[in-house]
Amino acid sequence: MVVLARVDQRLIHGLIVNQWAPHLQVKRFMVVDDVLCNNEEIKASMRMAKPAGTGVSVISTETAITNFKAGKYDGQRVFVLVKEPETLIRLMEGGVEIPKVDLGIIFNENGRTPVTKFIALNEKEKADLEIIRSKGVPIVIQYVPTDAEEAY
Image (cartoon, rainbow, N blue to C red; front, top):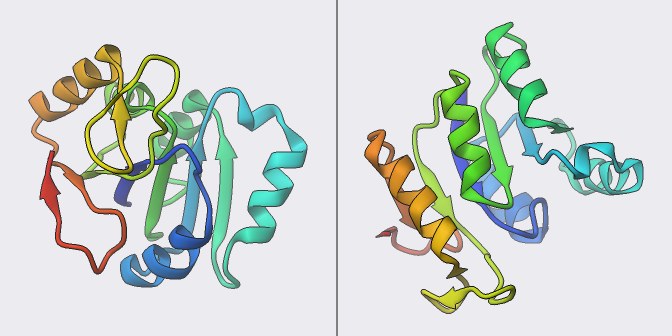
């Protein structure tokens, strides 16, 4: 079961491992990225970064959908990490239930406009977030679990 999906271009990093994982009682980190899933070096570094007692998957969108449909993560508290909102739309269209989306770090580059100190979005990302919201999924901005949630 997905406990949270986070759009964060850094994916698995210190804040995710040291603050979010204990707060959410995560049993599996799931990085869904159609490019990184083929990079063995990055996958190995993400596996090393995870806390003991948790699993990590660095997989494609299609593999994630297939695995969820097959019940592979039933009984696990899964934290989904993606680089862009479009990936979450594809997961949702594939039948993966996303209870809430948190916007983490999205760098101010490639034509993005700053929205907050840590988040910059382009027009496609803004439109994708509206699609997610239209499906009834709340979108929040919360850098670390101790920060108050702000609605996007």
